[in-house]
Length: 88
Image (cartoon, rainbow, N blue to C red; front, side):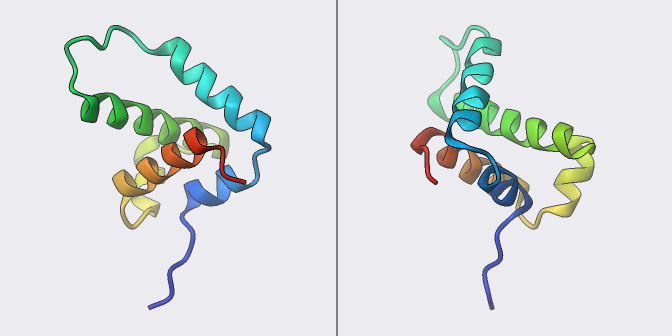
């Protein structure tokens, strides 16, 4: 089976490195207290924000975008890694 890029990957692929940094910065500035959350919880919250940002920019709700993805959670986490690593 051929692996195809997800909607989130395609969306991030169209962003410049600076736009990805801006997304990450915006996510960090919106983040509340995390002292009581395990790291997995923090990562999932950040991934959910990637999913939300993508959905908003595409004019979809997060539920609509999630319905279009094969594995929304994995796609969002992969998107977060792309943003953090700064992949081109």
